[in-house]
Amino acid sequence: MVRSFRRIPSGSVVLNPVSEIALSPSDRNSILRSGLVALDCSWKQAETIFAQSKTGNQRALPYLLAANPTNTYKPIMLSTAEAIAAALYIAGLKQLAENVMSVFKWGPSFIVLNKEWLDSYSDCTTSEEIVAVQQEIMKEHQRSAE
Image 1 (tube, helix red, strand yellow):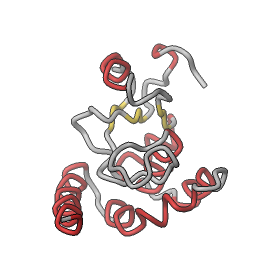
Image 2 (cartoon, helix red, strand yellow; image 1 turned 180 degrees about the vertical axis):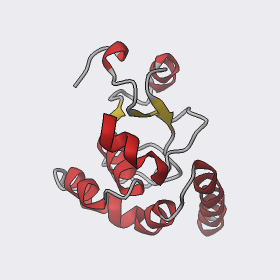
Image 3 (cartoon, rainbow, N blue to C red; image 1 turned 90 degrees about the horizontal axis):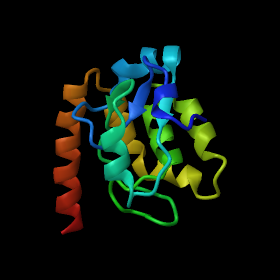
Image 4 (cartoon, rainbow, N blue to C red; image 1 turned 135 degrees about the vertical axis):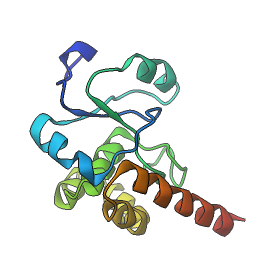
């Protein structure tokens, strides 16, 4: 737990929903070497807080659905724990992701709800591939919601 942006390790992967680079399995070594950082804040404050975050390797998570009680089934509105678990899963650290979510009563539902998408993302190699897969997932999800 750090309370200042200056204390974030420089080589770490920082989850930032407004980053222009998508998190991908290629970020695994940075995560293992320098850590994974998720900023814990309300979505109401997110735009201001994330605009200030410049430290580390800034990465956005791809399209996923929340399972937390506040935002169930809402796209992108993940809790901090869901964001961490998603990043770990995509980076190939699936057991760690499941361990993070096991702490919450609703936690395992996040991985079940997003399993197909998480597996598709974790099969990618680069950020560009993640974005391409995400676009297909979003199209498919919109069609099924109509």
